[in-house]
Amino acid sequence: MNAPDWLVARPIAHRGLHDAAAGRFENTLSAAEAAAARGYAVECDVQDTADGEAVVFHDFTLDRLTAEKGLVRERRAGELARLAIGGAADRVPTLAELLARIGARVPLIVEVKSRFDHDLTLTRRTLELLVSYAGPVAVKSFDPFVVAAVRRVAPELPRGIVAESVYDHPTWNMLPAELKHEMANLLHFGATEPDFLSWRVADLPCAAPFLCRHFNQTPVMAWTVRGEPDRRRAALHADQIVFEGFDPEGPPDLAEAEAAT
Image (tube, rainbow, N blue to C red; front, side, top):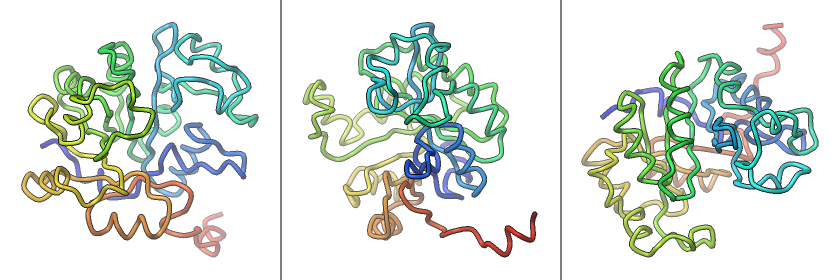
């Protein structure tokens, strides 16, 4: 096992501590900075670009969060750097920029997005950046092929599988039933040997994470925790939360903040 204590020490801000109402959007440097200021670990997603760079962005397409349309991977990193996120000041950052901004202040958990096409271009670029990073960092993916590659290429990096118990969302329609069964039941465990699991909170408790947690001491993160009911479920069946939409430790102490300034 290669699961450092910091994986479960502090709550993990899903795509950073974002708040669209405040003009601070997911997977931006502002969201990461807000999480770091509160001492929370930062989770982010990475996509690949036309020139082989890793950028911090969740969707495969630009449509939801920018004024542009089309696939992220059809744009060069320099083009993406000029695109505003949500019409705010933040632009699409590269993973290298995010690493520099966090500067090892808080842990970072990087999710490698996958098209399940066995293309490891993004995985290799992500690992190239992470193995030379001085701060606490881990990598995860839904795709067992990606996590198995992390195991081979950078075994020193903590690696995790993101999973759920039933892959019935339309997002997963392109996957064969056999692969969905394998993912839901961790039947790839021998190839991936994950150091931690990140499981959908609504599916807890269930057999695969329960057995890994209790018999293999594998830490389980619960995603995505969006309020107290989710948090209570996670407290019973997981070791960590990946949260959004609320502050699990409440607002900062104003008197303490004023004393520090």
